[in-house]
Length: 317
Length: 262
Image (cartoon, rainbow over all chains, first blue to last red; front, side, top):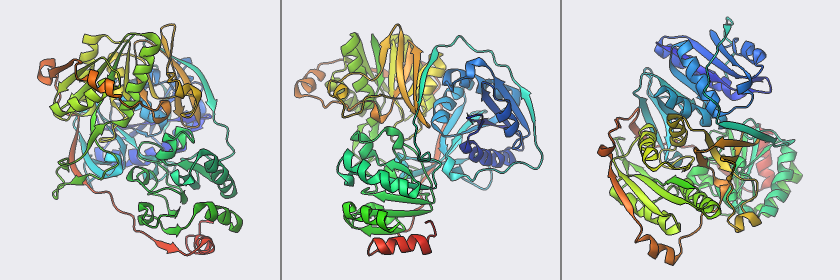
């Protein structure tokens, strides 16, 4: 038992980009365990996605059925546990997306296995000790999973997207017997936005409490985002104040992003926030407080009144 | 309706923690301890549901004797009684298995927990508990109404209980999902679910008289050997500070010519 199983996520009939980053981790893990990489693709009408996944791994287990029409943890966790048995996997990994965070620990309970969350990579040149952030990103812990089966959720921003393998793998259907469902999907309200998704965006503009109130947040940040084709993010303080929905929160307890350009506007730079954006390629900070901790990590710091600097930036872009 | 709600004593997430020089431990001496902020949201939600549907709110903490402080804080907010499982630090899996035992004893209709503790940031215990119990789960609960809405001011619960189900709005990638879970169920809370109340002075006085039962972990008869062990701690790699620019014009020039991101 040394195979590695990757749990693929399907979105709009295709493999979600975050899954490709988890494949990179899975391949490295398989070289360490001496096993093969398997994948499980779960959903309703997922033939296309399963074929796509087969470009990356040796064996794909396709769990297809009406019960998987919506990504409900109760059913998906059982499918993952079933795929563990079918693949004889010692290590199961999945990207730490909203769905991954929901379903993977439940699968760990079904398998009575230990799980490491939000893993950044392996700790040593060999072996399976891993690094993960704790204490709001203040500390990097090296963890060892002692159970025979090990589950790992991987932080998408820490791994490159994998390229297809030299040789495509095979797809096989897998049937899983489910318990009577106790979870019902009621509705999904897609957030319709012309802007890119926060975790996939090339540019992120993020606002903090320096913007004073919800109205100025929207008045200043939205045009700036539109001008740059950027996604909008926010600090925890802003989410706490109810100016924007929680899903815009960048930080250890929110979304972790690593865009090419991150512009922090009126954000002081609490460790909690920095833990969610410090892998960005270029970081810009605009803040009137020259002592704000955000300047300690920013590539380009502008000490200025954001209510003047942001409109001026709009003009010059 | 009976609700079990968990509160973990954690280091203040706004303060920087220190590590011993050999990287073997985190120095908690002299640190400020607070209830896990997501757990305070869980307690608040439990109290609102109790107000709407009646019943009892039982607060559980697992930890050393000093976690009594955090239980008392929840009791001061209005919870009815507390249970402290006396134990060393456990991994998420052991926490879930301790809670399985307490659920068997207390038979709650709902367990509400913070989505993650701000010390180990695992985001697992609620899902593990639901998995072990075979109960449905609704993680990262939020609500449609904003935190500045009238519903929030009226302390209306975000979780809707009707016909033996809990309706929960969840913020997921790309949108908002509503699911219905058959009770009994496990719900974990996200930031936007509510603003936790502050304890009132009469609440604090009353809390002193409320029962906190202490349960030695050995009496539960479970193996708490960790499945995930922290073997070393280190500071995160620091990112070097760059340059300060004089004005917006210089900033734009640097982004175009130096960083080449525009």
